[in-house]
Amino acid sequence: MHLHDLRLRLRAAGAGPSHEHRILRTWSQALPRDGGKRPTANYFPAGLLAELPAIDAELAALARVQTVHPGEDGSERLLVGLADGQTVESVLLPRGGVCVSSQVGCAVGCQFCMTGQAGLLRQVRSAEIVAQVALARARRPVSRVVFMGMGEPSHNLDGVLEAIDFLGTVGNVGHKNLVFSTVGDPRAFERLHRQTVRPALALSLHTTDAALRRRLLPRAPDLTPEQLVDAADAYARASGYPVQYQWTLLEGINDRSEDIEGLVRLLRGRWGVLNLIPFNSVEGSGFARPTLERCERMARTLHERGILTKLRHSAGQDVDGGCGQLRARALGGATQPLRRAPRPAPAPEADCPSLPRS
Image (cartoon, rainbow, N blue to C red; front, side, top):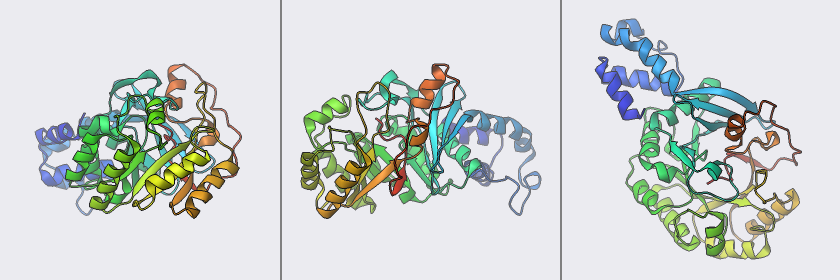
């Protein structure tokens, strides 16, 4: 179900604009429907009251928490079941954030990502995206929504942008706290400029070498890093929010001195912040996470060279469940708990566990 279908459903049941707004607001914000001054029974028309149980059942069926995997850092990884039996992952982040999925699977095929291994199965509809936020808010307060879960948001533009418009208005999320993460797609850059609710932009960069990027992200748009950064920088200056450049640290691949030089050349003078995220290990990927010392040294060097850099810890790495791994385990019938991997001393920040991701 898309949000526009949900609105039509409410209107067919007899909801006027204020009734519709109240139902959608309380659902998306996980608020009690009778929390205001006017009780539902005295406010809603009789026809709508009669339909409310069925409507509530439809809303509840959009997304349900199947399993919960808490991390030592305060995050919670959720395996979320959708009405058709498919599953996606969303993650409650420390400090009031939630990471949501926009697709079941992914078509980009990033070499270091579990999500894209099975390809794209279907789009996550806009109401299902908001339902992930509602599930998170039923567990804890949420003021920030990042589209960094399973899938590539630019490949589900209509659904994702409808969800962003909704969350930035009815959902009461500040526009700068809605973060659209992408590997970079001209269609996304064009549409984002035209939005009423303009989210912040996160660009999955990962390398300044065009040939290496094509190998790491084989089905991403064939834009050079320079073209991507130019487009991202233009959007940042139009929206008023700095770009979050995402760089998944892969040992021996993009953590070398030449990578530092490439980043300085590419990002110096740009309005943004570089987020270095140590690789969230995926079994059989062939990639490894650099040591914490190496990650810290790279972040410090870049900062000294004039690039605003943050070393971020991918939330919940201690439960070894990077984006796509919970779903893969569920499909494989695994019943044992996620193994707890040795964890280095925490980095300064926590970010969405779906990075690395396609």
